Amino acid sequence: MVLADGIFSFWGSQLMIGIIAESHILIAAGLTGLIFISVATETVYYFTGDKRWDRFSHGIAKVQVITFAPGSFIAIMFILVLMMLWPLFWTTLFRITFWPFVMEALSFVLYILYLYTWYYTWNTLKGYRALHLSLGYLLMFVAWSQQFMVDIVASYMLTPTEPTSLQSIIFNPTDIVLDFHRVVGDISYGGFLIGAYASWRFLRARSLQDKAYWDFIGGLGLLFGIGLMMLQPFIGWQYAQLIRNSSPSAFYRIMGGGTRSFLFLIQVILLTALFFFSALYITAQMRKARSKYRRAAALLMLMLLFFGAWLCLPPHWSPNLLGLDLGFLGQLGLMNPWKYLALAGLTLSGFLMFLSYLGSIQSGLKWGARGIIPHVVLLILGLLVVGMMFDMGLIREESRRPFLIYGRMYIQPQTPDMVPTNEYAPPTRNIQDIP
Image 1 (tube, rainbow, N blue to C red):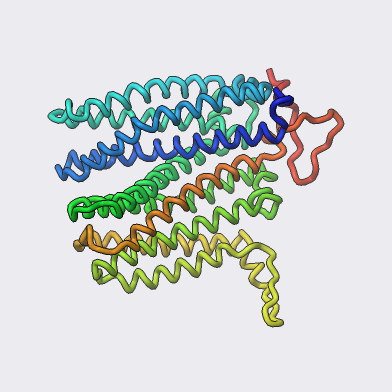
Image 2: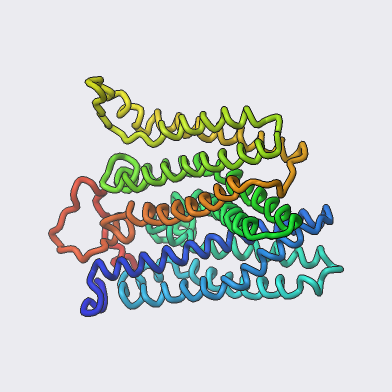
């Protein structure tokens, strides 16, 4: 039951929760990904002594300190609004996942302790770099731990088990894969955000030294972004199969031609655009550097465009062009096996493009050369990855409708004689009745 109906309508309550949750996810996911990247780059500095890596890692730490407070405020506000507008759902979920919430709170406290110690001792522990780096790894661990606890709650809502033990709640069918999916996605998201910010700084830089540095950071951000993104199709496929096995109607609603399949199609279009513009950046950088791999990069970009267009074909599409029956295109738009093949082709082409880019860097890619096209492309990639994160949040929440907890607890209050439609799996006994 929704509280304060006199202030917020039923749909208004859902909209408010959605806006707050999406805002928090966009900040929290970025912070988590940036921590992994910052610790990794400080590790590189520890072994190489290249001051660019130290400057970059320290800059990320500063961003962490600045943005952590507003991100935490939004998270706390989300909990308060959820308690006020959806009290029955909140108390039910909190009772079931009590210990993950306790561990999440503990991780939050340790996160604060390690983050500020890590940042403010950067210069103090300059002569004890290994000790400072160990603080970074502790911070990285508690950041992962905090997210893992949240993933337990989120995965339980979609693929619930009988809450007879803590083990059954934690190791529900999708928890581990969801956490892996989110960690990889967070690092990729952070990489693309770095690339977008670096491109903006490059375009504003006046000295050649600054342009070279921000060009280098933009390329590094793309390496993290597209390098980790190439893993997502395989992890996402495994995640989708687990949802299909455990919550079949949720899978059908999003990926099997259900009423919210357009959200997944948007995600596929954004993924294709992300691969394509990444390839465009790599090709432009290679041409600028006169790399010997630039022709191969152009060919791979065309392959990405082909597989991307195939992946975006809607299922059961029957276009008619100049009297020609093109109904076979609708068959190619089916998920199994055609879109899986297209996704494999897209990922393989992206992987080969990634290797060619690494080869160009290894052979001496010159950073800071003139040309604005690569940096405009990085800005576009930053916007695309934010759109992907927002759409993914919608997909995960919309897949459960009409349930708050899949098969157990409805969003809207239901009459005792109501029978779910065939689109949804019938609920088991009401979860509120579980002792």
